[in-house]
Image (cartoon, rainbow, N blue to C red):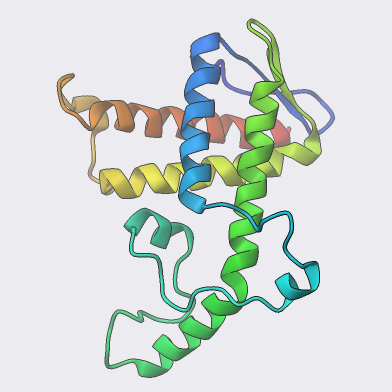
Length: 187
């Protein structure tokens, strides 16, 4: 298991990894990257990309809808057509950039994990810590949505043969990892 993050004294953080931790983290973040979707093709015209519009409807996948929520009210209520219209406009112009930022954060995490050898410490410079926090938060939102987390959940009480147990333990572990990173960079 990852020993939780400790401060490096300069706004960064450090944690020891074992090989299983790095493989698990990388696998989970690769799945997030696949969910967020591919970035623009390398041959795309950069000027055209500036004027590209995103989707006007929320994603059908509840986990992605959690990552890319509606901006105004509850567009699920048909009686609130104004909220539906505002949310569609907001999504159209903001979701591509939000997806790109989330993709870049996850890629930064994966690159950092790829650069750590077996038995080495994972050291994050201060400028990488916000990316790790954002990507870890997104991963926890996805897992929490898949698990349908509520305040009353007691994942430790799940029987070992429950198919949700591995996801629940990953959700809790990532929460501890995220909390320790926040504490480390606050020191």
